[in-house]
Amino acid sequence: YYSKGDETGFVYFNKNDSVFLNNYTPSLTYKGTGGAHNTFLLELLDTIDANNEKFDFLYKKPYKQFKISVDSLRDQRRAFYLRKKTEISWNKEFDALVKNLIDYSYYTNLEIYALNHQNWFPKDSLSADYFAYKQKISFNNKQLLAFKPYINYLTLVLNKNNFNNKTTISNELKALEAADSLFTDTSLKNKVTYELAKQYVLNYAADTYNSSYFTLFSKINSNSYYINKLDGLQEQISQVKKQTSLPKIDLITLNVDPFIEFKSNKEQLLFFWSASNLNLYQKQIEHIKNKINLNKTVVYAINVDDVEVWKTKLPQVDSNFIHLNATHLVDLKQKWAFTSLNRLIYLKPNGTIKKPFAKWTDFK
Image (tube, rainbow, N blue to C red; front, top):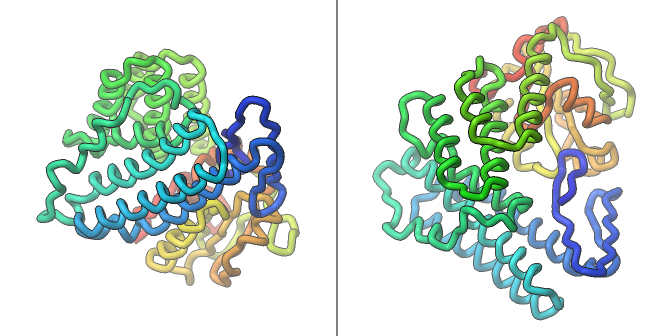
């Protein structure tokens, strides 16, 4: 598993493989022994990502229409997998990896739809066998500990919205307790409870945390690495909230000139984007058009990719925004507690911080 900037992906190594990953161009390429396997994985992941961009639309379809569409997309991936399997010689381990990638992407789509279905279609019922796929799932498969689609699915299953307590914190606590009961494998329990706790910290960064949540997390999670990592994230967020202005980091303009300071005669909104998630970028544009008064607000679109990727992948230069690039992602994470493209920062005209962890719901 590799991470480059805000982009992550997989590299598969079989015995005696020698894979060269070229990530200095806008599109990744693989060469060497094992290159064919990784090129196929990359193509499959690109297909899944492209399909996922359709799901904002598909999730709002009535059940029968959604099910036909999601099954069709899964079947297309399976057909692609079977065709490539005849062309490329691979072992059982690689075959299991590909099957899990297809399956857990599909399961995740089903789970997200179920979470939102009643809100969108209160009179439309899911079929009695809708969750039959869960019978195929092992919730303690240690071999998939480092497999992100599996961990993402498990975290989603334990989403706080699956619990019906009146208060949010009660649902958050129930999710941790459910993880404690569900996972017999300690490594998986530690990994998933950390992911749940990280979501809690990020989702409520603008609010006051409930100490009982961290008490329970520390009791359930026995891995000091995850506990220290969560403490570090809380500390980063706390430091940003104490600041009156954003710590200085290197930012450049479209002309590759250094950006000096956030000062204006208007309030200022900062949002973030990456070429690895242009679908989210388009959503943010829509939010800005619908929620932000551009006569009273300066909007900064801050890209987190390499400069070459930024210039290549920039959909279009929107005159409503000031386009910037964060040249050092490490500084952005450490000094601004940046962990997600969903991050919003709201500044006063003089550049002082108004809301370091703003949400779209703050704007009407």
